[in-house]
Length: 400
Image (cartoon, rainbow, N blue to C red; front, side):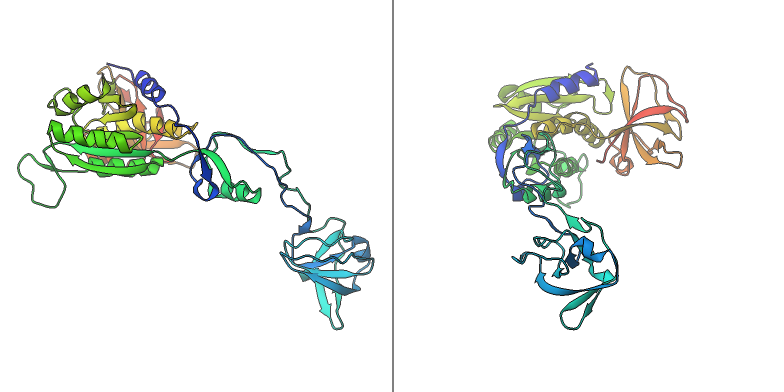
């Protein structure tokens, strides 16, 4: 059997980042920057007021209260060409350019407007009070974001503020997802003996979207070589990667293996983990294909451990894995020696002691999807007799 780490190294190493493309600012949120972003403009572009109030010369407010004539008014988006002289005030709004000659702003709450175009200043201010200086946030030449940064909405706002309208970024990849098997039923018809309702493809489509992929649902394909080959070739023509479910176990019929063996360059693995021991990976005309097992829980686990990090690498991410912690077990994590690492589904939470604690998410069978549905982490339990309550265990979060 192949150690999990070896399988991950092989699969992830076979999925290099796609070439970056020029991307419009309005479309870059969620994508990964492919090059550094260096500011070419200063932010803010001019000295401006941090509050609604009155622009003044600070020296005029050292003895208060003081009454000053209001000689102009400046709104955000406007400006005045009046050069302030000692003993004057200018009404100013938040974000408006600071008039020439003034060096401070008194907030409106510390003033009182008087008849005859005058204002009473009730609190003294120091030079620079409530003034946001030009370039206080960003200066030309500042390295703002390095290649590999995931663009958040806030980062997009910064990019807009420096007029970075076109970014070099790794695009969202398009991933085809399909299930195989005559036993799968898509609609609500009563099940015949031997039939089951399709669930893997829907689960995987959701996991792919959560990963940031553009999902192309290719449906469920019956156990027919010609039909499966047609769907796979169509998927390879349209998409950057393919995820399949079913047909990779040792005991499966030969339809999936026969087709992939003929049209793809495949590696069939038996990984030393439980669940998700069977796994296949290869390429069709250079397009990566991930062959996941058909058991629902095995499909999820193999996606998390192998497919998800590889797909993230294709989209330029530097952080490929989910968050991980060293947790404490609140109950026994039982298992038997079998030469495999067991990936147990657990419920993880941070408690008052500041530690991550886990407890088993009920049944651990590879077919028991309902028992797994509320789990939010995978505990990595090494070969042996398991871990008693109170032990430390490595966990990989299934969220984040």
